[in-house]
Image 1: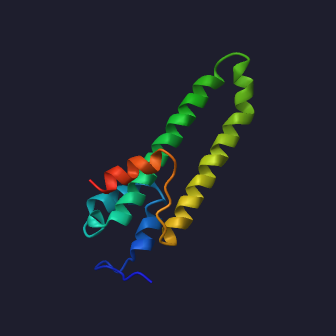
Image 2: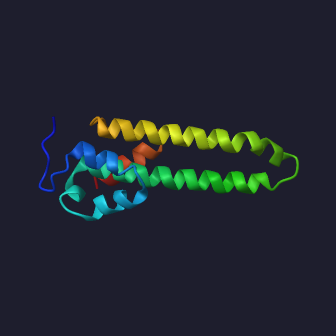
Length: 117
């Protein structure tokens, strides 16, 4: 079991809490000792990039939804894409709480680069 750091919060707990919203993720990137911990930084950055990707995809789907005829496809696509992002978020959350460095495709690579910089 990982040792809790000075704050009393273990690395696993901090990594998992980073996924709750982007607010804890940003806080962990600013506040010591979390901003020096590669594990917590990785999960914080991955949370931020996942939120940005989710937002960007929602915007694109909203724009596509305004197009005639193609917008009808969006009725089925919008909830499915939302469900996929929700499942990805849950998987990341569980893995972080379990101490695993689960990397999402593309997003995980960006997060790893930022965590190690």
